[in-house]
Length: 146
Image (cartoon, rainbow, N blue to C red; front, side, top):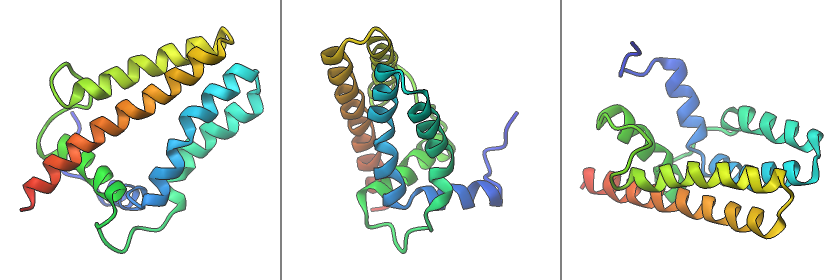
C-alpha cells in the first residue's frame, strides 16, 4: 500500500508541475491528441504523449501560490492526500472529473472514426469538465486556508 506521506521526489515533481505554465501547456494535450488520432498522425501522437510525460518536469516551481492554476494543482494534491478522496466518483466535485474521463474516451472514439464535429465538441466538453472539477477543488482548497 502506498504511503500518504509524499517523498522528496514526489514533492519535487508536484512543485514543478504546479507552475501555471506547466498546467496551461498540458491543457493543449487534449486537442493535440484528438487531432493526432483524427489525422492519423502517429508522430504528433507520440510527441503529444512525450510532452505529457516531460511537461511537469520542464518548468521551475512557481514563486508563489497566487496563480489559479498553481492552486489547481495544489488543490488536487490536497484533495487526494490530505482529504483522502480519489479523483473519480459520482459525488460532487468528482462527478465532473468522471464525466471528463468518459467524455475523453468518447472523443478519442470520435476522432478515430473521423467525426470532426463530435471530436471537436468532445474535446471542448472534456476541457470544460476538467475546469469545472478544478474550480470546485480550488474553491474548497482556498476555503481550507482561510
